[in-house]
Image 1 (cartoon, rainbow, N blue to C red):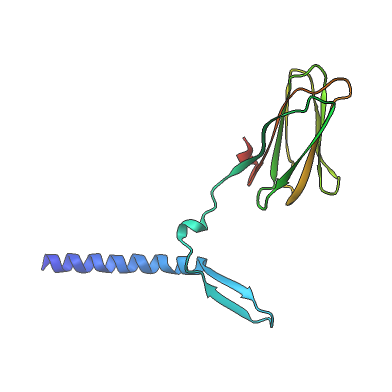
Image 2: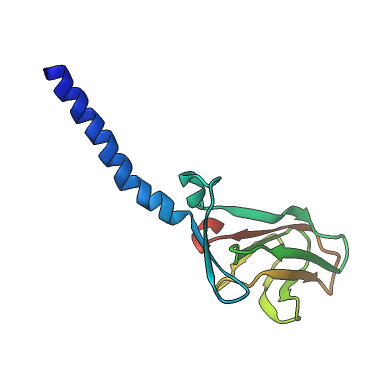
Length: 162
């Protein structure tokens, strides 16, 4: 009698736990699409798993520890991906003269700028997320050839840049 009662209780617990989780899983996989005639079409993605619903924190170094050109001018391009709007730029100047840094968007609008003195490092963060697109980072030193390294990192949130 005890075995039947315990088995029944376990079976009921399994059914109830599945019922409470299933609506959340099914609702998360509902995809609504507007049809061409303004009729909403609802479909369920069968390949999605609950793990696919979680977006982990992530950052990417789009330019990693690249050497500055042994020249007085240099420009490098990088791309900000969707949902990676936060940007950090790091520059190390191992040369003998100051280096000016300017980051611009694809329309030429300045997004970030600064100067790094000889023997020093400089870093700056975007004040808000930037849009998806191409950006250019330019370096100039009017008095001597540049020496050093730089990196550009993009992330989902500002906290992920450190």
